[in-house]
Length: 134
Image 1 (cartoon, rainbow, N blue to C red):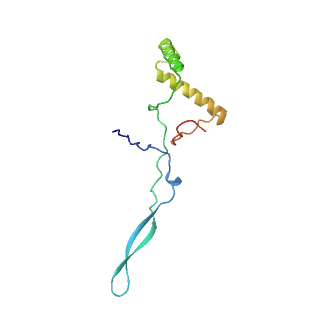
Image 2: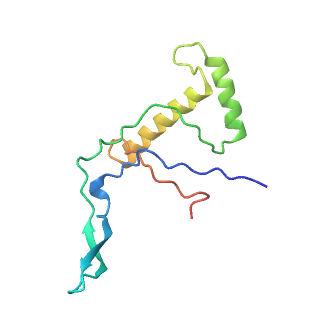
Image 3: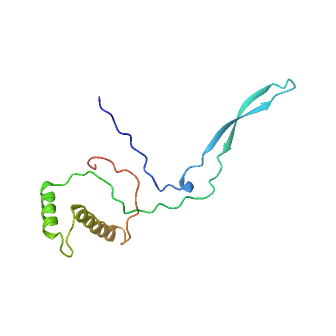
């Protein structure tokens, strides 16, 4: 028997109250009918109360998160060697994580320059479609 881990919702989804559809609540109310004093229920649509204030926008953090992805074996081997040979030198990589983060940041800047007018891409909280793109 295997157990599956539940996915926890992503916090700070970036959804603001203004971008959510307006919600309506169904409420039953007792209404007197006629002289007998007998009461009948009717459903009444009422709008949900508006939020008092918008939440603050989500700010990206520098906290590390674990991700699993496939990397070529020879790339991993070269990365290990590069870290071993450059650790402790100015401009060198102290850890594999530091090397990967620096490389990703450079590539993201290149993509932003080429495809987004030099502006950083905004954070996205949507999930990517798994598997190969069609």
